[in-house]
Amino acid sequence: MLSDARIRAAKPRKTAYKLSDSGGLHALIQPHGSKLWRLAYRYGGKQKTLALGVYPLVGLREAREQSTAAKQLLAKGIDPSAQRRLAKQVATNGNTFRAIAEEVFIKQQNEGRAEATFEKLRWLLEFAYPLLADRPISDITAPELLAVLRKVEVRGRYETARRLRSTCGMVFRYAIATGRAERDPSADLRGALTAPKVTHRATIVDPSGIGGLLRAIEGYDGHAPTKAALRLAPLVFVRPVELRHAEWSEFDLSGAQWSIPTHKMKMPRPHRSSPSLLSKNCAKSPATAGGCFHRCAARLGRFPRTH
Image (cartoon, rainbow, N blue to C red; front, side, top):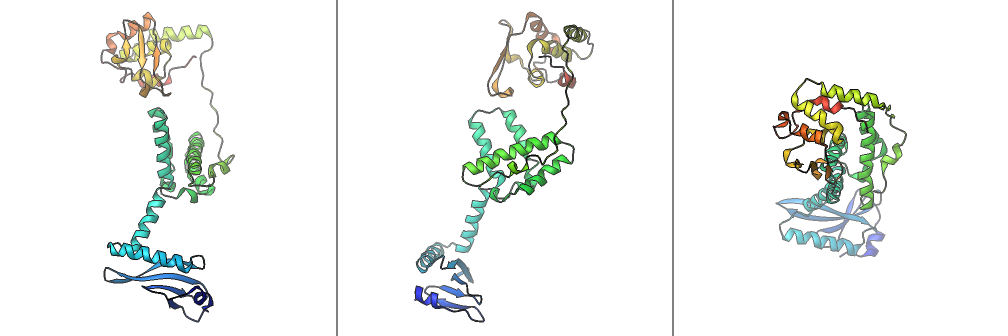
């Protein structure tokens, strides 16, 4: 049986040697002077060794306790070395960038965020996952994150890169709050990205111009569903996607009210609009008899917003 005094007094030799305790536990004295705890055991007919730490950081008593725990696993038919690798893998997987991002999504779902918000976040993070998904989040550095953002920038997608940095920062801050990271490397990248050039979209500010637009809509001779949607747009002022996805079940024609459900809204709450008699007649047009505006022309997405 070993004692602390004997281990402290052990001197290095030209080659490593063992100081045995009991049951396979021993201290391995290295030529450079370090003293390592090891447990020799057999599993599956093979001789194996389990590392238990470095003396004196791990004392004799703790080494014996670890040895006993390993033998208890062996008694259950479990290889302690394999069990340790599995525990490390589980701990790492739970602390990866992807795992923590998924936790952030669950948190936001519980807060009632709109599904469209999740789709945008997932789309953004797909740019980061090839390089960062399986990395332990505490190991990710600012240069690593910058490399991810540069891959987006070289495509000319400067605004996307900026939003991706912000989204990654949200994941890092959540990791800090839950004790799995100490800092947010995205904060170090302020000023490192190319600022997107702001493009101001033309709009109509002159009342006579608005009148011209409405007359142009009335004179439109394209697809009937597109014309119906164009006539509705300036009367209800909803986003194009909400108009294109409108369904008959959302309309109360007798009360002239349109109720858009929460899952179709950008904000996590339903929206009610009260179209005028003109929009009511527009909705009743035979052109919309299919029940929704899914087939409305894609050009609706370029409809000028005047409010």
